Length: 192
Image (cartoon, rainbow, N blue to C red; front, side, top):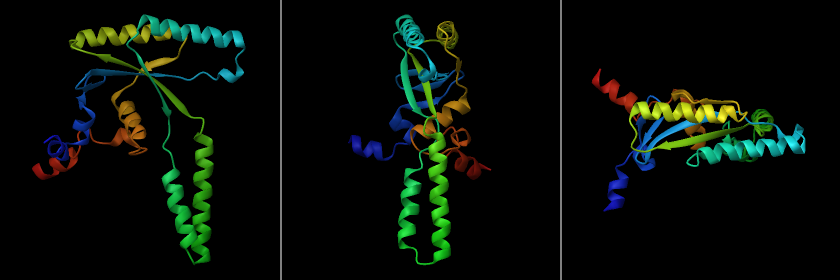
């Protein structure tokens, strides 16, 4: 029975996503607030400075133990594209096309090398059974706590959350341009 129900479900339903809210993303498990924290290059810090950063992070987590931390690539991965081009390169007989394919592979290698260290750190706060004004207060409180501990932080806007989800689920580099609802753009065309 559950399998039949899942076959008709949208991706949003399967993931438990309901809709975007004023402050984040409504899910079946509560509203998610996303905070983007700029990474610190610890390779240039002294051991003492690293220990201080760790203590500051511990302070944030002890003040808000419900915070979840996510570390992801901040850019799309090109592995599937490179594998496709490599396969085409092996099968291609035309030397001019082979040269173009080789250049495409080199371009992707170069682009991925430049982005290989590009990471983004998100702090997520799950708000359950809160009214919108309570969610707003919680959002401000968490952002202030993270900032007071020396981290550069901001609450992510809708476009940033969409981009993060698109990269996380390997859907698109242009996640901020995806529709809020699966297929919504087609529904509007039919109505018009």
